[in-house]
Image 1 (cartoon, rainbow, N blue to C red):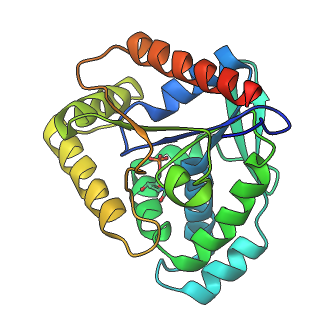
Image 2 (cartoon, rainbow, N blue to C red):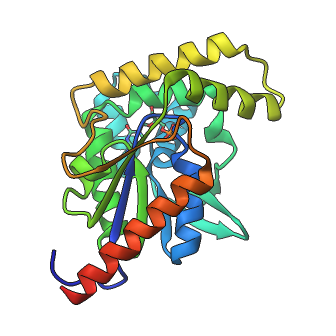
Length: 233
Ligand code: DC
């Protein structure tokens, strides 16, 4: 590794849903003063727009057209980060279970992956960013200076998701929430294009029995070490 990019290093955080990527990326970005790019939110935005336009998940031509006319951006709002699709704040609308499942299907389509790949590379290439997703360390930025692969058992991820749904007043049982986590894992790992996979040079962290603070400390220490090494580089 030699030198640093214009604004710092690129940090890739990949892993299955419910492993804690979003919370950790947010906290780590704040500690480092880095930009947080939630690539899942970008796929979710495509799914929401496709749903509204009545575009089916398998209709690649219509999906390509839809992505061609879609501008996705992030804007900071105090402590939180809002997602804008063609200027509309879709931060809440993209978080439903229905959109989550549709996103798993839509994100497997080649034209969608291609369109978002070039957007993500443009957003991250100067460094000083943390990108969270499924294929950041393997496809989007295989040359990222720091890569983490964050996982936890399906039961623990389902339990965390269930608590989140309960807090939002959404009806669900623990059993069906765990089933959905397993179903989504299967779709994300089994797809042809950019499947969920740990990069060979990623640092694997199993968060099942670790607190957020413990994982955050580990991540921050690693990034600061790599950053120092790259600056000397
Ligand atoms: O991280 P999330 O749950 O918001 O992601 C929603 C869906 O998008 C999930 O099924 C996986 C998919 N996704 C992807 O395929 N590639 C990414 N880089 C990010 C998310």
